[in-house]
Image 1 (cartoon, rainbow, N blue to C red):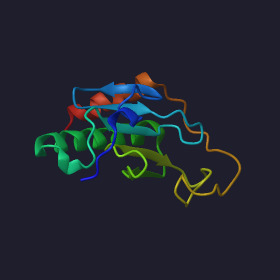
Image 2 (image 1 turned 45 degrees about the vertical axis):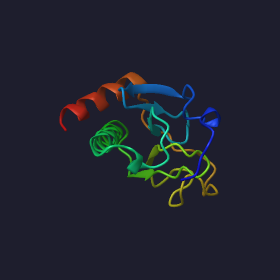
Image 3 (image 1 turned 60 degrees about the horizontal axis):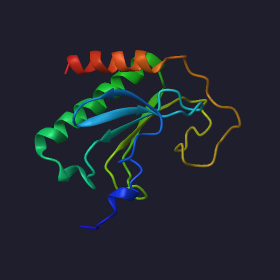
Image 4 (image 1 turned 90 degrees about the vertical axis):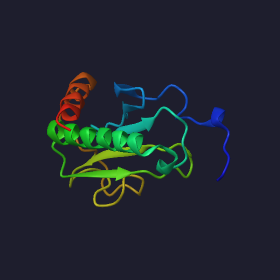
Length: 143
């Protein structure tokens, strides 16, 4: 296993963006990206390199949070597609990017990290973090 300096981990620090939901296990942070309203990161509090570093029960709890966030974003933002990414090559702390996508967003059909395909950003519905947090809680209750 590779060793990394935890103090250099940006995800172990207070998050950039607004925390919309949090538990003892993880937090959901709304990313401030006007091109992708509803873009969230799901970040475990514990510094972990891989999902298999977690006990099975906690893995399933985090996946339930991920599914609840997806459900909430789909309900509130009504995207054409949801992209899920868990890379961690540059930041070796397990986390997910949950990115709503629209056929007319800046990068579609390419990944959001690719060169833009068009100059204008997609203007999605105006949803605040409280609404998203409430929708996540509602989705978690149904799981």
